[in-house]
Length: 375
Image (tube, rainbow, N blue to C red; front, side):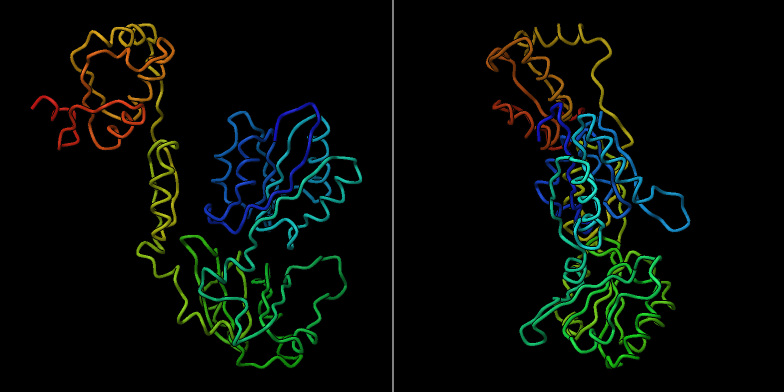
């Protein structure tokens, strides 16, 4: 996506929550967006990929809160695109799976706005997968049905054909319906679906705080109420739910259910955060420090310029290495200009950063503290 005088709107699927499940195309667009209009179900950490000067607008819908109407969101997308902005409309899951992406695309097309659809992984398959439930299985079923429990409130009656659901069988996945679970299960029972049908509810699927409840069509609503189960959640109806006993992989990770705050700088936190998430943790990035250049850049530049005359250069952190060579390569275009100075690095991360500049580390003390250099 290149910035130009002609704006464009990208309807982007944010995926189910886990940052590792975001598409490369989605990340690329976020990194180069002028405007981002995002939903409540999009992982807010994705906004950290945006340019610092990007305009970020929340357009999520939360019960009991005043939010933008769909018409207002459509108008906003058109307005920003018309003034030459590249607009990313970030929607949880996939924009065309119960995300009203079709309505927004229609509005953009009617207004003559250039647009692009970027699919995302829907929670309808990701949440069951992270709970150890395949929505299809050769020995269990040959089809899957998706339906929403949150319908247009203006409708006089439900558009869900419960009689057809009962006849279809297979796996049935309901999105956005945990608040209406009792009513939905009651209708399913009334239309002939068997009462001992296995059912699972997965809340915050793919995230470290994922929670799963299993029951039957007859008792799942009661169990959810007793457990204080809240949205956002996905409901899975079908015999495939029984496979969870063998296939529950994500919730067995060593840090699953643990919430960990990482206080490093945002740039440095990503690697650690990814490792913690891989172990099942729910990670919150909360930078408590900020790395800034020296207040007197002229004095610092003079020191860097004279680096070749030093006997030793001691780097105490990767940030120090970056700051040094940022100035160094503004003064010189050859790393050999560092001369005969030997290099000491505190800690393996600092040493690796020096090596990234194709320089040899002469001393790396066993203790990762500056005092160890003089011992």
